[in-house]
Length: 121
Image (cartoon, rainbow, N blue to C red; front, side, top):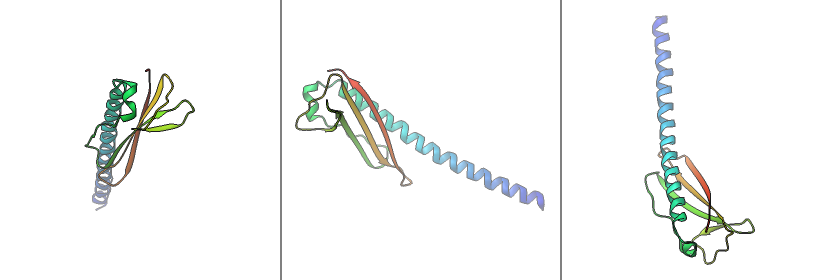
């Protein structure tokens, strides 16, 4: 009887651990995909001539979940961040570019990944 109780408790703890690992795996998978998207956008910006940055719009990417948003910002000479596309842009050389990706995972948790780099123009 006592052994059965101990076995039941062990099973409950094991099941909880499996659920926790599955949840962590889902978050990790989303963050890995978001980092890949952010790196792709940064590479795209690096390969875009500076004159075309004012009309730059990030590519549409899917796979993360509901409400996926990709925002690209460039730091101006005075340190303010300007979202792309924009009417005019006065960025220093090299320009600091920041990509932010926001999304909501399958369980309704809001998540965010941010990446930045310096781009010589």
